[in-house]
Length: 93
Image 1 (cartoon, rainbow, N blue to C red):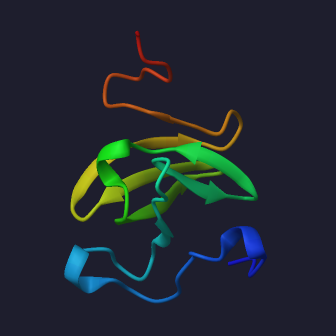
Image 2: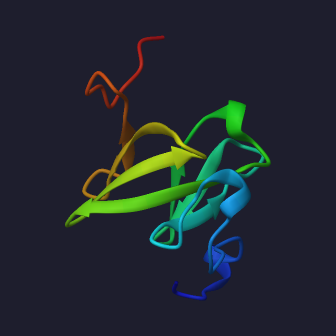
Image 3: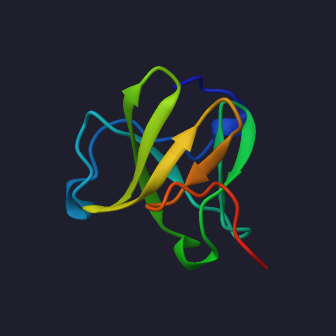
């Protein structure tokens, strides 16, 4: 946890009621559907607004993103985007 003002919603400790273990980083999903990660904005989902998501590092710069026990996708720090279950970083409009 960096403790900077950009990470003001970062929490320490487990959120066991959501199934988020203490090995996860936890972030609050803001009103625009994103989280602050390493002083950058990352889109999660408008559906998760007001909720907390957990991030578990699985490799250097690669994090699984969870809402409770549900894996939402994989965050790649290189491009600061979340890849879905099909390996897509971008959505068709």
